[in-house]
Amino acid sequence: MFFGPACFIMLSMLWYFCVRQQWISGGVFLVLLILNVPITIAGIFAVHRVVGATSTGLVKAIFAAGDIPPPPTYPRQDVLIARGQYAEAADYFRDHIRIEPGDHEARLQLAHLLETRLPGAGHDEAERLYQEVRRLQPDPRQEMRAANGLIDLYRRVGRHDRMRVELARFADRYRGTAAGDAAARELNALKNAPR
Image (cartoon, rainbow, N blue to C red; front, side, top):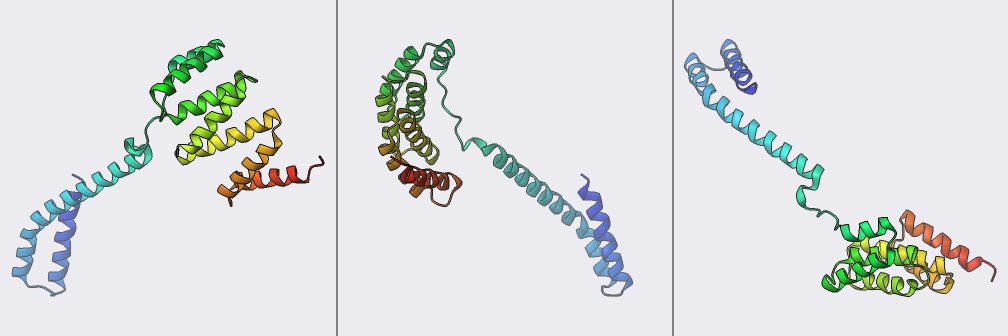
């Protein structure tokens, strides 16, 4: 609506300027003046289309337009964890993994639960779960979480031999990043530490 009148007036003034400068004849001026209407209408549709496509593209970019699925939720397990019923929550996670063997997020959450809330008995299973996630080709974020989980687990249980292997793997895999450099520094500190 705002573009149409402005476009029509500007084009009319341009044609009038061309007539005053004697670049075009009076007949051409009349033809161009008549053509202002379809040119203005075409301009309105072009502006509307470009602005609509740009705004839609911007909104899709900001909100990822459904391209990124929401993270899975585990409401039953979350309630049990909030109540302090960690063993029961772990059982529900195990049942879920049996039904959905490709759910890496559930494996990561179960491993973290076993590692932090059910220490001792859960360390071996947590280690197995982290290794399963890495072996089953997860997305890069899940792969990094599994590697970090293994490093933290080995640090917690005092398995410095395995921790060195994981730190070396992590430093090599994420070389040039802040996390990879931190892993390399920690690996060097472990190698140089007195035994």
